[in-house]
Image 1 (tube, rainbow, N blue to C red):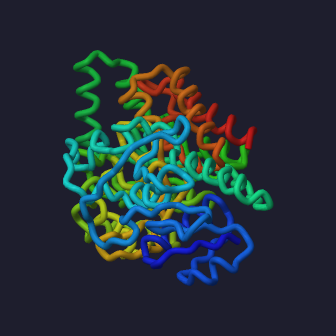
Image 2 (spheres, rainbow, N blue to C red; image 1 turned 135 degrees about the vertical axis):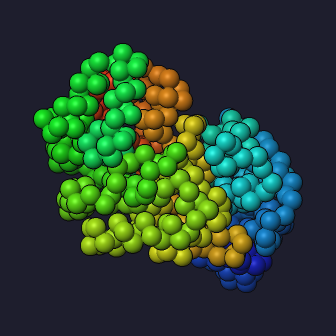
Length: 435
């Protein structure tokens, strides 16, 4: 156990200390506001306060953990060896307030501040402090904590720490369960006309073969995904999009009995989550309807959620997810940029600054997706595989959680996705054979 003296224990302070010590360092921590108790303790300890008590291991505190609401805070940047840091402090045994910086990142403090939105009314990643100061491409919080552990061990040689275990789980967005089959007849006709107009004869022939039930739909790859899951023994979650057709949501109708049967079948062999449709960011009642519909199909509570297009608004979206008793969210990433939105790969609880409380909604960072590699970065399959594995290896180094996002059509091996099945297969093979 590590004892921490602090003049005041706030909700923010308790939240970030518990996360860093319980979830990253894996060592219990106890607080005291009594100086005499701190002085009498003979084990590993440090003070977290504006000023040192005198000679002890000390971290100078930044005011942010003792405030309420959103305030303008001075953010000083610097380096700890070669690693960028912020909330730099002058009189401390480490050069910055790691707890204030950690809270700033995990609470998504900057997303409460005035900021620009992108074309989908999301927080624009270009606003991010991590982007602007070259901290976005690595789990900076885990890196800081690793260095902090080393510093503590230098001061307290008898102090030992457990090692975190790497965790790997592919996430499957089922945003379009079928390419051809199950679509309304008008969509089928318009699609066929468009194929002919652009002289795409093979897709036109395949479209008709599938529609006439002579061939399996190329996007119906679920049996193969389950086969790979069984072969490589890894967890997997399917996120289903249950909404009417719109400009951004293109799935087939989930009113079809055959599709509902498939969703139920998948739920018997893997975890199931809701892929919250594009417009649920501003329509809580629509989100509620989709959750209940999925629960009625699988006859189980739906505890996992992911926003389509990562379209979330903080804190509103997470307040809605928490109110609806979702337990796990997988939207903590950007749609167009590889990297760590909250500076970490390790799941953390949503802290609601508006209500100054930690919630029961556990946020799972996502850093990379197949769509991102193919359409935003425009990579070849070979380059995409390398980037995907390199990203996972960075997370593995620090015992983090790797949740790569794929779509069911990654295994279709047709048209734009020809040979992209290697991205999924090689990623799964690599991280299940090397754990």
